[in-house]
Image (cartoon, rainbow, N blue to C red; front, side):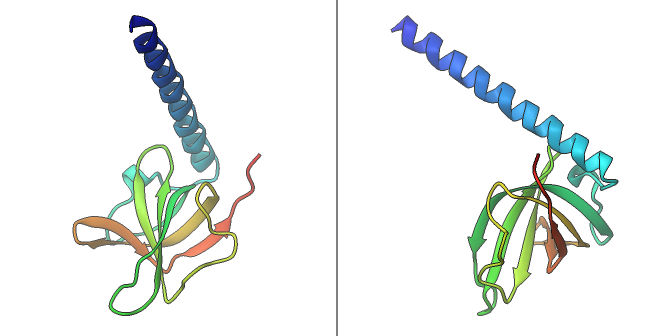
Length: 123
């Protein structure tokens, strides 16, 4: 039983190290690109953010289709919503994007509605 617990601990440790490495890399790339970090993005201000899309969900809002994504840059996450869209070519989980828009507060969460976006190449 102890052998299984040790292997689980080692696996979790490797996963945590990989997650920390990804976070650091995303932060470095965002700073290099001159973007605001998500953790520092103020509400009601126009910002340029860069990171990786973690999730992608079709979630209608007020009867209108809405493509909703969670953007992560290593410092935090923010919800990005494209109203009136069911899908966008190139937008998928794991994709690196740069978005520009005004940060809104919606139901206590920070959201950017209909941002300008640019698909980023991953090295």
